[in-house]
Image (cartoon, rainbow, N blue to C red; front, side, top):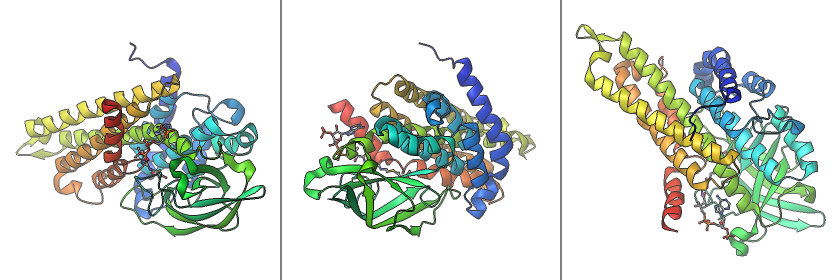
Length: 379
Ligand code: CAA
């Protein structure tokens, strides 16, 4: 067993750390306060290869692996979790299923611009009545000649406002259950495909989250992603990778909290001593450090399994569950260490807390991760 990163992985992390420190971190507070999508940073991520990290060169990607992906995503999320999720959706939820399920023509047409940053993508699975119960799709795809006509509503789609293309899931008939679900590549400009609502969120305010309406959206059969009825498998296997990304995002947030709290504890003097000299503070920092490291190792392991082509459903669920709950616990403790200052908007503690919370919810709640893990334990 080898816990060392390769030279290429260390260099990739260095590149991401430099970008995150010099370009992302200085903008994080403004992005959060103004709730603005960081167009310039997303453009830079495209130039640096961060939008298609594990995509081969022939499709405009960075030719790196999934371990590099989690290393970079941790660094960027440590600076700004909004920028992290924009990157994560494009890589995990869009480029990855295209790599796995798209035809050569679809790869040329969509994957290449997505991986190189010319396009941005989104993943439209959730619906008003299909959140945790993803198989309960009510968006319907009706075959008509050489096309499909899609009708329905999609909820909570990250990147939905800025995306050029969406992976949309729909059922060929509710009676088929999950075996009727089919995935489609839908261009944003397709008539009938509209943003019905832009959500106002508690955190990750720089990323968009929208509700889509599909009103007789005609999608050519060439835009079927995978086969008819294969959509649930496309969604679930995509989410296996997505959950590794969210784990990395959560590790980044937790590390940011730890750094902030340790720095503050060394500076802040009370009772004539830096508060870092009190065991009450030391124990909180030590617990945080252990959990962050454990979450990071679970995340690396899941990414490594994905690189090896090994099924990683359970490991991705474990990494996401533990890392997201670590981020929340760290955010609560970190804010407490900063005391009254932690509660004020001038300090980032409140942003970390708001951003950490979503990692326990999107791409499968903590409860869904526990169900997935339990299924493996109990058969
Ligand atoms: N990979 C491949 N296939 C899988 C799979 C996986 N990880 N998980 C399940 N399947 C297959 C099963 O093998 C089964 O296939 P067969 O019928 O051929 O045997 C089929 O899918 C159905 O499996 P289940 O009976 O286990 O399915 P279920 O209906 O009980 O659902 C679930 C299981 C785990 C609860 C699933 O619905 C789930 O993950 N729910 C959460 C959804 C989710 O994460 N949503 C987030 C959306 S994205 C988002 O957050 C927005 C964003 O923009 C960031």
